[in-house]
Length: 452
Image (cartoon, rainbow, N blue to C red; front, side):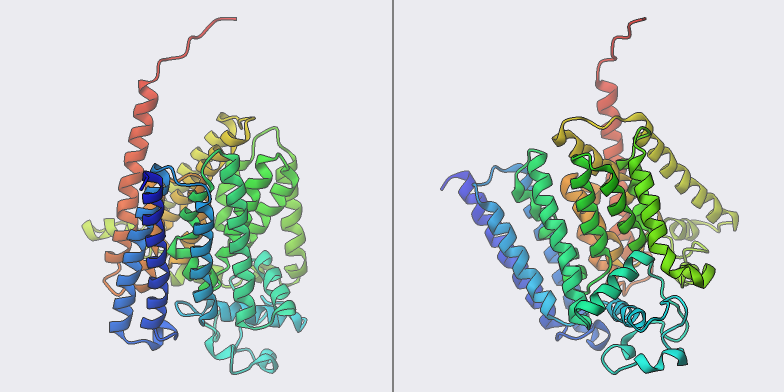
């Protein structure tokens, strides 16, 4: 057996094992939400996620280092579809967020601004049912937190495919959009399209997009499409798609410097016009259009710093004064600002499509991962939109983040333990990558400078 055939056989075995692990995970949770499963089943499910993450990392290493036979992409796609069908057909197991999505869509179809009332308000009593309303989290006190682009998608889903399964289909569609865009982008970058498995076999989108229908699937699909449009210099459409991504989750705004350059006026203009168009239907509500966002920052400990991994870690070492969280915020914003300025103003976009894909994806994933590690979200799906960027720019620190992220959904240990496993190694790997990159640059001969 040739090396290529042997590698393909190993890859196929890993793929089958990943499908089996998804089925085992569903069986361990009895196809019911985690809250209804006993602790022993949840612990066993966590083990299955860890095994799946290790297998995925092995598969990534294999596809990155070995030359695989032509047609391996079909194996990658077949395994990806099988895993997604299993979670698509199951009820939402790891999160109840999809019920809020369905509710927000239903409220809009009734002609009501989704930011106006909490679900428990008497004004919305006529919309309640036994299938959706009882499962809405924070129904008694929280207005919706989701931005206007997300609301538009919720309303469209409610009109076309009402119900939870319909919303799952919509998010699976955006997941498929990411996969389709990545196949084209990998070929454009001159890489083996089988490297799609970096995204397609990753447990995170399988459970969180097809399974739990999180809005982050829209971000993943939109970023894939934005990269595809950018490599073809379709700047106005790139701006439109980036606005859709940003106003679905807000956080993807951090990637804008990877796409924009000072000479490019079409992208920011299209971005701004799209954002205005999306907000106009909701502005009658005033500043309430932000919904539960300020309250969410407080509830998750972001506002006071207690929910931020690095600040909490420093706080365990020694008592931190109140001003520390403001200094931390200023440091993070300063770092992101410096990176964004450097990418936008100091790096030219290559004219060659293969180099442009790689550069923009790498810059976007650096900006996004710095932001997410700094905020240290408590939920795995917040990291899932990194996956299409990591497929095109597979940095070890980001691959670790994506492999370990599912553990965040089941942080049954003291707060620092689980986030420490996820974010700690990622920070260490990122520092090592920075050291190696700097060392490589220092080792390069200085350019010859000629006076003119």
